[in-house]
Image (cartoon, rainbow, N blue to C red; front, top):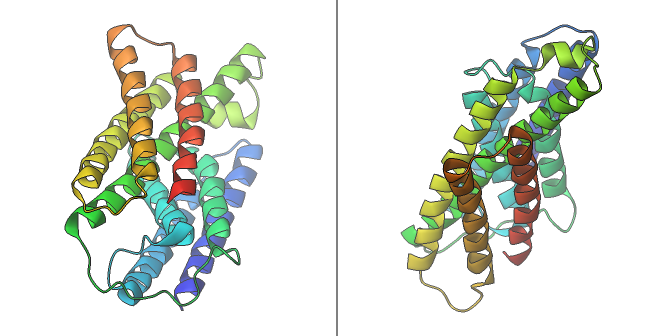
Length: 254
C-alpha cells in the first residue's frame, strides 16, 4: 500500500505541473497547481506514515526512501513559501522536480519492496538523516527560484515581454528575497544535520558526512560572500543552482 501512496503523489504532482503549464501558456494564472500540490503533499504524508510504521523509524533507508522524503520536503517548502510570497508560478517549476524524484524512487532496483524493520534507532542518527534531507528541500526550492530568476532575466534581455510566462513570473525582488530566505533555512537545517552526524556513533563509512560538510561549506561561503561583498542576482541564482546539482552527489555515498 505504501507504494500506491507514492504513485498517487507522483500522479497528482504531474497533474499540478501540467495544468500550471497550460494556464501559463494561455497567459492566465490558476490556483489549481497549489490545490493539486496540496493533494500530492497529503499522499506523501500518507506514504511516509505507512513506510515509517513498517520501518519502525523515520523512513530514510536507501536512495528510494531518501528521494521520497526529499520530494516531500520540497513540496512542504513550496506550500510554505509559494503562496506566502505570491509565487504561484513556483509550483509549475517545482512539480516536475517532485515528479522526477518520486519516479526515480519507484524504479526497480531503487525501490525496496519489503523494508526491514529497524531494531533500534539512535537519536543523533535520526536527527542527522531527517535534518539533512529536510535541508535539501529548502535548498532545492532555492535552486528552483534561481532557475525562475534566470528565465526572467533571459526574457528581459530578449525583450519577450508579452509572453504568458513573463507576465506570470513574480517580480525579481520577490524571487531574490525568497531565494535568500530558502538558502538561509537550508543552511541552518543542514548545520543541525551535520552536527548530529558528528555526534552519532559511526563504524567507518564517513564519506557521506565529509561530503555533506563540503556542501555546508559551499553554501555558507555563498551566503558569506553575499553578506560581505554582495552578489548580483544572476550570480547568486547561478551558484545556487550549481551548488544544488553538485550536492546531489552526496546521495551516491549513502
